[in-house]
Length: 107
Length: 144
Image (cartoon, rainbow over all chains, first blue to last red; front, side, top):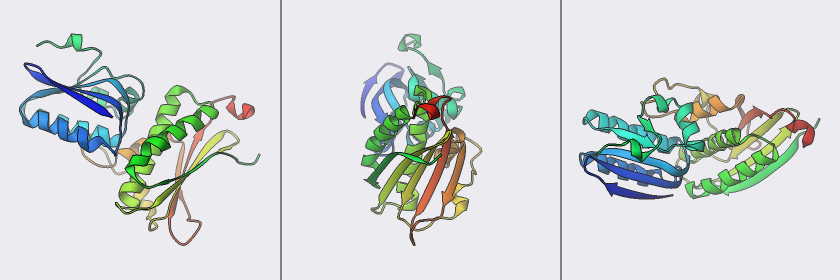
């Protein structure tokens, strides 16, 4: 798993590549929480993500709750395949804002 | 009809091994002719079960995990064996109700995806065997 972080005016983008599991989800957690704690909304790019397990999902939920408590947002973009199936299975696709493309983002 | 073993692998109970275990599960599920969608879900469930063994059964201590996959009539049977202390069957009870609260998500996914979940008695004096079953796709049992 690798990730890339980009700052934008109103949000930060965290693009995940590969597979997120118990082995590397602590890295994702640190990145996500750091972004939210620095006062930015976050967009998590799933376009190149091929797998995510419950530890990765729990990390997203934690960051989502923290963002919400700070009047910020956490949005997921480009989820397909196995990661989208996990989101649907857990019904988190109805909790998190999910968009198909970054073109849908303003700012 | 006897049980046909599709896979037998042994790994150290370490998070760095999860990626290799997932690859082997995917290969075995292809042999069993599951759809891509089912392969994703079964791989997730086996990964979650291994994760629970690493986190809770071994609790950070070193150990081994044996994964066996069998085909029997119209079912795939997955056995995950560890050599940690025997766990209570109550550990397999679902408690979680709110997805936004921490804990229990892995077990919830296991029950959602699999048709049958149970703990088998250990083969020796220690350890646990988690048995998971899932119906095979129509037609595959005749072709294997």
